Every structure is written in C-alpha cells, then in structure tokens.
Length: 311
Image (cartoon, rainbow, N blue to C red; front, side):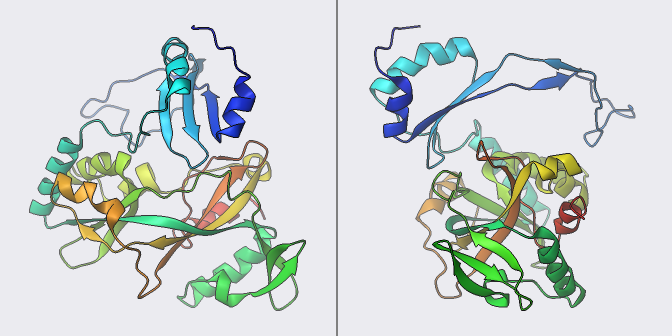
C-alpha cells in the first residue's frame, strides 16, 4: 500500500468521509434445482463459515465512492481516492439495460412500473414503542393510518421536540443523529397492476430487476415482499440492542418507466408539493455505530411483527 503521511482519521472527519469494514459469516452454498429441497425462500441455519472482510468508503450523505472491496483492492485505490474523489456511485446496478428489458416484459403482462425519488423531512427516535404500538393498532382496527405528527401533541424537551399523547406519555423525540444517519434519498419504484392497484412499492433500484424477474417467473406478490421488501424477523435481544426510528420523506412526482432515459430523469422530478405526499417508515438502528440493521417497516405490513418482540 502506498504510504500516507496524513492523519487519516482527522482527514476523514474534516471532509465528512467514513470507512466501514464489514465481515460476514456465510453458510455453505446449495444449488437451486427443479423439485429440489432448497428454494429461493428456504432458510439456512448453518453451519456458517467466516469470509474475508470488505471495505466501504463513503461520505456522510451516504454517497459511495467504493463498496464491497477486498483489502487488496481497497489498499490500492484509497491513496488515489484521497488525492481526488471521483463521482460517487449512484447505484449498485451493473446492467440497467437488463432491468429495462424486464420492465418491458412486465408491461406485456399488464404491469406498469413507476419511479420517483424522496427527500428526508425529519427523523424521530421512538421513546415508548409499547405505547406507540397501542395507538397504532387502535388505528389499524379502525382501518386508518396513524400519523404521529397530527395525532400527538408536540412539546419542547431539552432543545428537541417531543411528541406526547393525551395521557402525557412521551412517545417520539426529534433525533439528534439526523446528520450522521444515511438518508434514503435514492430513487424508488412501484409496480402497478392492470387495474391500477399498487402491488409493490418502495423498491430500490438495486432490487428492481430481481423483484420483476421473480414476479414474472411465478412468485406471488406476497412471496416477493417476503424475499425483498418486508422487514427481517428480529429476536428480542436484537430489538433491545437497537433504537426504533421513525422517518418521514417527501415524495416526488412519479414517472412511468419505459426506457433508460426515464431512469436518468428521476432525480430531476419535482417534489409533490401540491398534495404534500409523505412516505413514512420505521426502522431499527444500532445506536453507538449509527448503523441501520433492518429494512423499512411499513405502518401496517410489518409493524405488528416489529413490535411483538418488545412486549
């Protein structure tokens, strides 16, 4: 590795850059064959074997400069990156042409694919998840959605806003970690059927091809959600180590995807200020490392399983 004569930690801090080193244990690979025991939805309980770690290099806005690189390649490229940062990696997708081909196949089956982007509005830490779950489930029983911003009362608490219910329970507090958390402000997609009903939503670009391929090859909407979109099952111990976070995003106007040019134009779509449409979600974060460890948890399609570990 080329010699670096700077204080790397200070250099990264001053430029709001960061390096992550991730290590995973992998189970033995098993082939997918027709009529075989292993399917795309099979779980694997191990045994697991360690693998070499991988490096990620990014800024505090979540823009990636290097991702999933082994140590040899990282050591080779880091000095050059420190000298002059290249354009960030917008998407971790190698074959956008293949994605568009799948979009066209989905259109032949009666589906429409719409794209949009979102911008973070605010972030809230959940102080009392049990009370919040009770309010949420009451709304679900009425066939309604709980909007914490309008349902609860805001009060000032240690220079941060806190949302309280009618009994005075403090439920959510404005997060002080907003600047250091990754804001999920990339492009997302939805799949609409021939009747105009949205079947799948909040699909990141890196998962769009896999979602469409699975849908076109016989997987049900429910199975696709479980595979790519629904939150992971978490144990009580995992939940207790994490902080439940509530985020709100402004949503842009939506654009029907038919070509590569449509994908390239998504970032330019104006935010939908006429209807003030928001997308809100819950997710779990490791507090100390400020790392998101769960997929997005929708207010209805997963919030129940999310809270069941807490009670």
